[in-house]
Image (tube, rainbow, N blue to C red; front, side, top):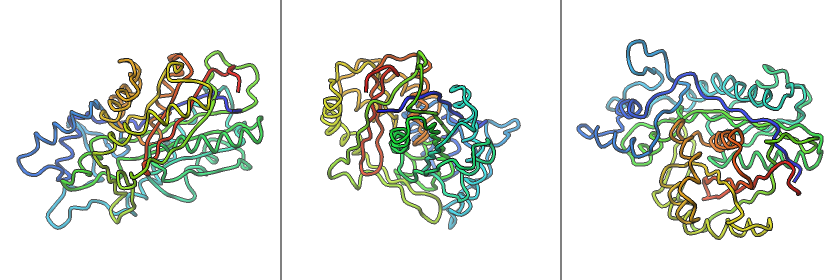
Length: 370
């Protein structure tokens, strides 16, 4: 597969909130019934997240945190900002955060913005047109002939779908320079009320952006460059009701079943083995694992059913702890840490989203034969 990563970069909002303070803020949304604040705080601790970034956080002054976008829940008005209001904020905040990640990726690749021939953007937390893609063209100096594709509303595995589009571009033209950008502002969709889905979603999701630059015609490979060797997609049977992401009148509404880890556990070993077999490998040949941390239970389930050694998912756990779940951008945060840390390859990456869908990708050293 003619797809070599030349550079990668990530960005988070300038302000973050500790998980303990996030639990206190959740009470503000009436996410805990009176007298059950300690139970809510326990749910937040169980995520094993330490801090999360949000574009909504403001200068706290002498307080621990401050934000004014979500007003306190009041009887009769427990829905929060309208979807239109949230999308106005998305249009304002998404472009600058995405641009920060792109600048890092381009610098890492040693390329000017004008070298990019194709742009693939990915987001499931907002819509605007002109959108992030055109803002990147305008603010970073991408050529006005750049070919653009947007991958929208795919969920946590969206980066894999964006990589599929990018790989198609480099396969058609090995000299193409493709920029992939994932931007997610999950905090815009925090939900009011004590519903289980609301509490869980509010406790794990965060904001972040990530980008990578890739080409097929890479010339002499960098010592640490990774090549995409293959990718696979599987829709798990009888799981359509396990996870959903719907547009409501007051933000995008997440439905998240407690059955997700069990569904993944039932099907993942067979899916991974079939994918590796098609690549001429087996599980023992995989040197590292990059797993999207939908939550600690998902990571624990993956480690258990694949019989992975104790530290195999340390990077996934680390990104979750430091940043929370940033939807599609999260897997690129994990890959960035692994590439910069010179993790061993081949590396099997995976993420899960509505469907339920499992997306898998295998990476090797740039010099690996296709």
